[in-house]
Image 1 (cartoon, one colour):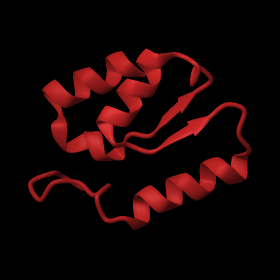
Image 2 (cartoon, one colour):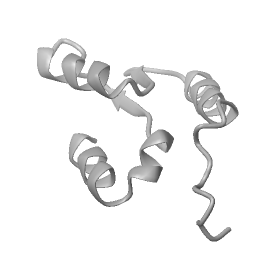
Image 3 (tube, one colour):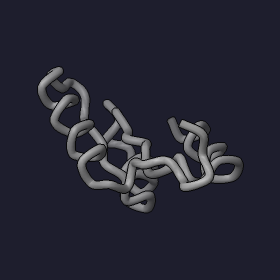
Image 4 (tube, rainbow, N blue to C red):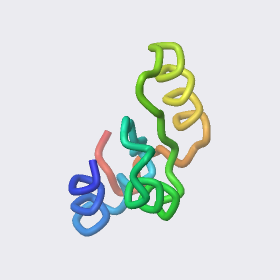
Length: 73
């Protein structure tokens, strides 16, 4: 999670808007701080498929999850 996000941020920043986090570690201060600092959506485990589907649809509908103009389809 965190490592992948940091790699994306450095190498493919246009993809960071397509990230959502899933965590079972909300008790950890470091996890809470990291997720809050990114401002990205997250699901707390356990979650239902309906919860996941709803959040994915929300991210896609926001319009921020699109590819950059110069990306190939």
